[in-house]
Image 1 (cartoon, helix red, strand yellow):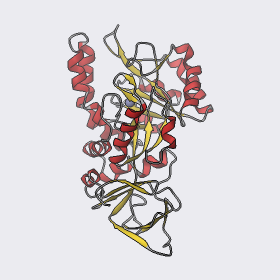
Image 2 (cartoon, helix red, strand yellow):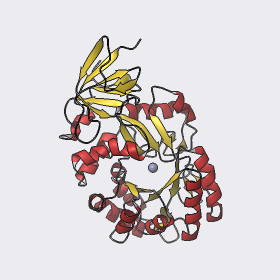
Image 3 (spheres, protein in one colour):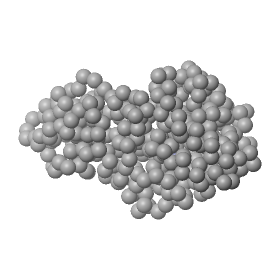
Image 4 (tube, helix red, strand yellow):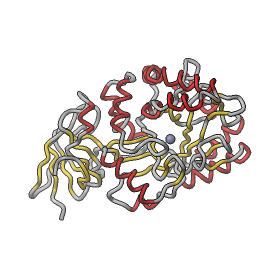
Length: 363
Ligand SMILES: [Zn+2]
């Protein structure tokens, strides 16, 4: 039998008022002292981190094999990300759900994009008249999310441009919601946001184009954003590569990059729900959730809010348990209070998934 683990806290069950201690019995959290022998672990306890935007089963060229998907999931797990919102994958990763040693996945099916208006081999590519049907198809493949590509470079105009006419968006959102799925969209530019929000979208990925026109609209509708700041860091490189052929696009990408922290800071000030996502799996490596949390803090979120964007509030948003009585013991044990210094998240004493220590220094 697995020994009962005594977590001699503090246990950060929420952003404030920690519980003094907790126990892990049969893989689950309890706040009632069990009888019998226990093994004690000291340290600050936080819920397993959430990467709210990554891709398992995808690399820069499209779907990858299962061994590569496994390595991606393990890299996330070992960095403390124990709940992943997969924002679109071309691979079938259902088998991950049967593996106790891999993070939990909340999938968005496959990206839905216009033909030739996204990375090749990533998306279910359709014209606008097929959008509603495709949304239904991908809602059935996912775990409660559908992912649209909201804008991308239009090679005819040489700049970012919305992918979908406004009139097809409302029926698409309605179809997803009827199927019990929320909808999110990849949006870099300013122009794609208003139509998507007016149509009833639930979340915007990247959201670099948020401005004074659209920010109040998102705030009013309670639309969440997942800024993926460590991915936005790649914009200058994308701009350099594109500058010869598409100078307007390159300049646009540079401008969005330059104001990225101000954009996220303004979103925070406006009260938008903000969640931490790395966008690992397309071009970026997995296992960088703490880098993203720290970037959110650099953009102006107080440390506790940046942490919450990858823990308490992110779990609630995805409808998953945090550190509550009877919940699966998915947690990190840390040297110090992460609300005081986010850097302690980089080197956890223990990463515990389903009650089993899977990584960290403590053994
Ligand atoms: Zn992505």
